[in-house]
Image (cartoon, rainbow, N blue to C red):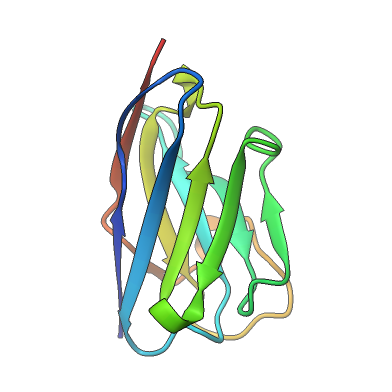
Length: 126
């Protein structure tokens, strides 16, 4: 079993920055792809960014490309989401997730991720 705990959310002004962290415990996650998703009120959960097991390959949604950066530190069992140039439309609960089995490709599909954190609220004021 894998447990994921997100932190780093909060309130930011438009144009500001936040860094989210997601720390895993339990079964090792260092050989698994991970992703960040977000869900705004009344909307479906949507893909934000994904990173492969060793951090060499990343993919970001068009809506955050150039502003957000996903990274990981396997020695700390932690994946990060650096969020810069925040916009009010980035307001959402942010979730990290991990795939149970090894995959050679990065996925943007919610259904391809097996374990999820509890989420952390990010609110961006205009």
